[in-house]
Image (cartoon, rainbow, N blue to C red; front, side):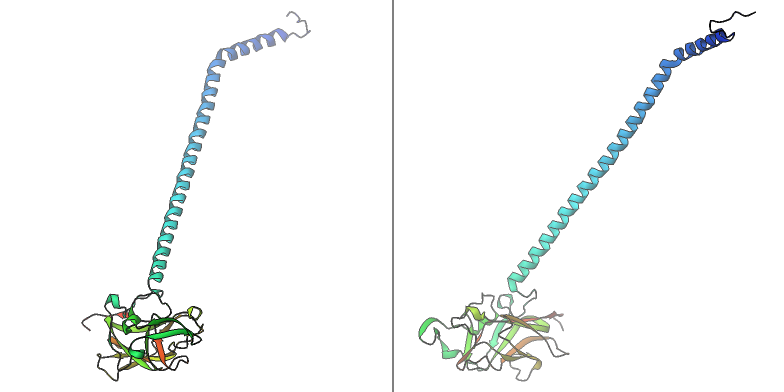
Length: 271
């Protein structure tokens, strides 16, 4: 008959022995399991760290690429802007001027239009106090000079002509006339500015007929630089342009011409 345990249960000693065997078995395995578990934990942390590092490196690479792209775009925009500003500042139209003398254009005739007084124009305030005088040739009309009061070609009366040999053969598309600003004039008016004018293309400098490209009006209230498109739907290639001033803004003695530009499309020189 089995001996009773202090608790009064006959199975208590058996249970105790079983627990001891289990605990003994667990105690024997515990160090290995701990190492395995610890290694797994370290491996997980290492994997997480490596993954984080890779993600962080990718983010840094993306940020670097974004910065480089931003800098590239900014540099390109600045360069394009500078080029456009330089181009505008050079001639204010962003268009090639085929009448420009330094590029090969030249005045070949004024067709009997006479320079006013063949010498000096006296600019005065209220007709009393002389301000400055000028005697400038027609060449200034196609030169790249700063448009300053008095720096113009003045011809007698309100009607006159200029024939310009262009720097190359083109199909004309538009013209630009630039006058001094009204605010810069000593008497605050530009009565001597051309008003109505027409432009023709000529076969040569002796052509007295030509092909009419358009009739225009320079409006003194629309600013000092005004552009005019060719009105003729069928302009032909030409190397000679005639500027014919028909009237001015009220000055009876003379008309002042400052800067006239000719724009167009280049063509094959053999045409």
